[in-house]
Length: 335
Image (cartoon, rainbow, N blue to C red; front, top):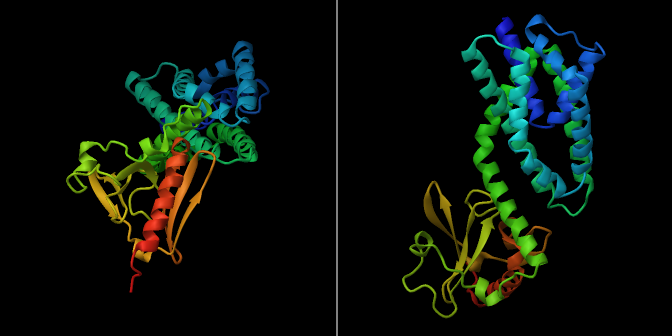
């Protein structure tokens, strides 16, 4: 039972370290110094977190993170720099907690704590990156305050209720593994969008006619009629949104072949699949410009099919929407 409780404590501390490593170290160190918690003999190694040098460094770094977390994009840069720091910090806390027991158990605990910390770090980074797409600054501040509260409260739970903390860490990590593919797609889309935003700021945007005839990778081109690339044909890279039928945030190409209906090409289960759009059933085509992404939507009653385009393709999107609108007007009405 003591082994399970010990593992629960280190997993719980790893969980909150992935959210805010410095707040975790500072909270545990101060709690030990002021006798808010009493360490069991098995966790006596954690007393090192109360050392004045450790507390001073943790306080300094926590102060820096406190302000960095409140500034959009700076918080994402900070998270990127801490991709390895937080999991390694969690492993270091585990090493301090365990001391030298059974080498196999120690190694397993290091890996588990580091893995749990990485899962919470990745989830936090993804949420922050998505929040940065919002034009208002308050979501970052609220998220930052909530993260600090979870880190400090979670550290207390890990020390006082190790079984609960361990269970929370295990359930969260299992859930993270389940949503990881979607999170990776969202992160990849947002990283590309941030890069596109910088290209726009520095004036490195291609002409619309170049974006409208992007070269398709061979796998994608094979799904289109032979001879694609002639006058009037186009392919614009974008991401799947609602209603497409493909995984959300999946990268692909919206294609037009002559005067035919648009088709979106994207990968699904390691295969390229085509998703045609019946213009005859479309009642409205809309474009909405955003901070990171511009949205192209096809609406048929309450149903919507949406695609997301990075900012460097805004001119191409507007030209594409104009052409699609003309194509819809020419399309026969569905019975």
